[in-house]
Image (cartoon, rainbow, N blue to C red; front, side, top):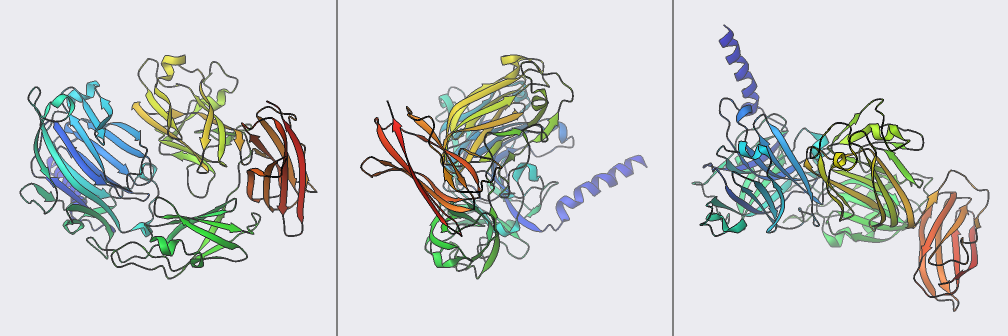
Length: 602
């Protein structure tokens, strides 16, 4: 009887994987043959969009004891990121060894080559021919099962990992140009590291080689889609994986572009579309309307799905709707957005210094942690919060900040005006008690500021460890921090962002009863000086610097701002002399203009 019950339970667990009819339909291509060791290489362009992933990986078909025989090597490109590739080795017990690798390109915009080298001694991942990451730990020896080569596109249920799903981004396509396999033949190879691999075959995907590849017809737990053969298309020398809804299959697009969200900051409204849009229609200002606001320019950004509108007369104390129509997508038969109305998210600038209790709640002047989205000014990407209650932290008087952490973190973003910032990363090792237990990289704005950080090795357990970066340049309105775990999970406990030279240095809650412009300080100054000004009403503000001959030197501010007190810092390498700064603030009720003189001495 007991064996019978176990049999029924097993069947009930397997049935949903093969007979379910899920809301979405993806595709998976897999080799018929399995391989033990080798170099597995692919050239592909990933699918873009939050909540889904397109992959290249090797995988051992399960035996009866599937958990204890798990072998898998992954390249996962998550559509939520525009600068990240995830590598993973999954070993018996379904143990993950994840590394997120920062890249200086958007993998959904163009084709890149990726490779996995698997040997008895190491697993290494490559990007465009260069080794990016290597694992040599004890777990590598447990990767000894034959594995098939696979590629798929799917939308997981795990939003913390892949981001929030929005079905308006459908259909999605991932484009695979070729795949190759080279066997592991030390001392007699012709490719790969030290020529220790021998090229066995390359498939250019001119057709479906049915002697090599199978099209999957299954699903699995945690997958929001079924895999259908119809969603694997061979065309134009490529294999195309498609993620669709229940109404469509194959390489077709009947859906017009949709506006996912719109956000205002300064004199700009950023409009994000669900898919790549055609440039001419996207840059036609007559296709955008905001009541009471003038749209003077529309510029399609390099990701082909974000348009930045230059606007005037925007009042940040008001709410606006954006009307969009006439935008076309880039499908063979273009689909046209007939019309859509979307509420504009009005940005709310953070006061400086920005201090965040990462992984925790509001504490003193630290903001509480939150997840990143279009509706917030800062937040984390991936991972989970943890707290070590009442733990005494050495080397700080802010113990509570170091008791909370966000572990497994991949990114942290803070919306800031373009400029130069001092960034302080606050960390503590409250879990491990020996070296090399937690190791990770940190990249800020495309620069590695720390490689192979081991907090315990630096300061021991339960002790404050800070990394201070004095000069971080932000040019896209967002401070981007990327974490790449080498061993276990990356973490962050606290974050402080201080403005050094930015469009807005500080905004406080004081509302002045008049417009004013203060004398710069210090004055005279050597290389940088700060200027305070007050706005009695929401205004469009411009501030410019002129030389003694009246020639404009630099524009410090050119945007809409709410009523309040502000500071702006001017940093210059000009020669000594007399300079003038002029403010012009245009509100609904008046125009305020004033000029002051300042002295630069080198």
